[in-house]
Structures are given as C-alpha cells and as structure tokens.
Image 1 (cartoon, rainbow, N blue to C red):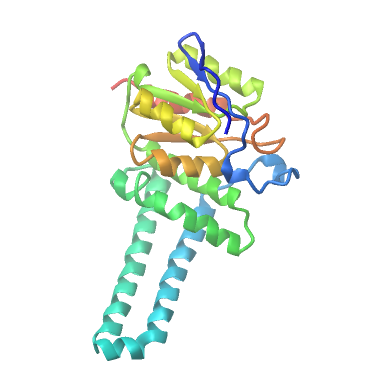
Image 2: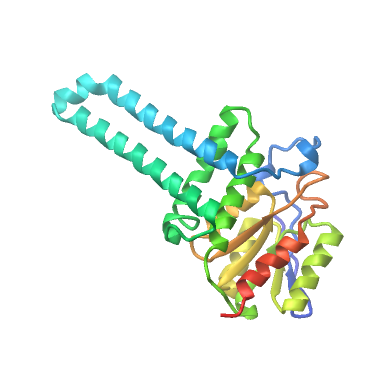
Length: 271
C-alpha cells in the first residue's frame, strides 16, 4: 500500500488525502459500462420487498432445520422441538411487525421507533439481507442498496437533531466530477462547514475519529455507502447521498447538489 501524501488544505474547508485504489466493494468490476448509465435510482419498495422475503426465508429455513432434526432433538428433551418452533414463529412475527413499523415511519416521516431500533441499529442489520435476497431473484445489489439508503435517510431526517457548523462534517470521495466537487465546496464555504475528501473507508473513519463531528453528511456510491453506514452510523448520526456513475465506479461521479444542500441545512437548522 502506498503512503498517503501530506494533507493539503483549501482554506478552512477541505482536507485532501489521495489514494488511487478502488473501493473494495468494486474489486470485481471488469470495466464494462454500468447498467442505466450508473444511475441506480429506485424506490424504497425493493428494500421492503426483499427484506420481508428474507425474514420469511430465514424463518422457513430454521423451521425446516428443526423439522429434520426433530427426532434427535426430542431424544434430548421432548419439549425441545416445540419450544424451537415457538421461538422461530415469534422471531418471524416480531421481525415482520418491526418491518411494518419501519414502513409506517417511512410513509409518514415520523419517529415511530427509537434510533437503535431503526436507522442506527436494526435497520443496518437488514440491508445486507435485502440485497442478498434481491440477488437470488436476479436484481443487482446496487438497486437494492439504493432503496435501503432511501429508507435510512427518510428515518434519519425525521430526527430533530441539529448541530453547529463546526460540529458538522461533509465527507466526499475523490471520484466526484469537477462540477459536483465545485458544488460541494460552494456549499461548504457558504455554510462554513468542513469538507473532507477520502477514497477509502479507513481514511473516512480516521478523519471522523480525529475531528469528532456530531453529525456527518456523506457521499458515496450505493455499495460504499452501505459499508460506511455499517462502520459509522451506529456512533455518529449520518445522512447519506448516493452518486451516479456514468463512467463506472471511482471516476467523474455526479450528485444531486440540491439534495446535498438540503441535508446540510437539515443539520444546521436553528434549534
């Protein structure tokens, strides 16, 4: 691994560290054009559909396992198979109830569940299940990951958390197009918010440790966003903005600048 060059500041706004390696989430990319021009915009339906199917499949597989092992389990304790069936049924019912409450929170934009039972906890535990189930049905994970980020952001936006400009961090990848990068820097200057460019998860985690922000607005492709939310969202509140990848991962990516400004303003709203 090459050592990062010395940080370079652009006024008080941005600290840049360079690293040319693609994110590990794209190690299998063969250089071919991405579907839909690298725009994986979709609706939240994919998350709810594939997560519910995943929870049902997990319960069904567990139930089938108990059924196949029932004679042996019963030889250990006559009550054991019934107890396990009851536990699996309870897991299925509670899981689907939880997902229904997440659906209500998404549809209404209200805080239905505490953060640890929603976007900063249990929700993050289901996003990998969603895209893996989606792939079983031939749906590329990027579409499902985009849907998961939509749900995550909707729930995060429902929180009334606000911070001062010096407590907010904008985290962006180096692969943004010049127009998108200029747009982000303009927002950072106008709102006096620090922005940091990093190409790898470890650099992003390091700057968060060093600066200790109370909130983060992060930009990444769908795959890296999900990975980053797993790493960071449990400790620091995050709003995530996904990119469009017209030239493949890690090159000339574009973002919705108006959405970026909306996220920054959300965290900086006056208390």
